[in-house]
Image (spheres, rainbow, N blue to C red):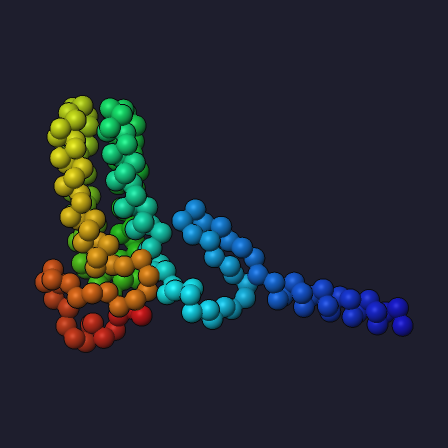
Length: 172
């Protein structure tokens, strides 16, 4: 009889453990895993590249902060981090609806970092600010054409050459 009580307790404990969720904390969001939630307010799922794209976008503010402080060494290091994050982002190209365009935007951003880095090395605040602001249109295109959530992106006017067949195979 003692064995059956122990067995029931173990069964109840295993059931409780299997039914509870764990909280996974990410600096940009908090999500609960371990159970299925079909709540309508949970929103669409994030794209595989979402957190990296968000980091790339936010890195511009980190560079701006160092430029405002005229901390040229830190500004250079923040730009180096921005380059690293952008290269990491480019690795997600094949998970997007238009890998070629995604890579083109990432390459355009990487090319914009070179004159920014040179302006910082010269400690030229005006040129550095201009080069930093030149990144805005590129970041805008990335966030416009490649949303952070897995939804159908708006049509791009970039002339990416997407055909109707390619568009119908977009990741939902």
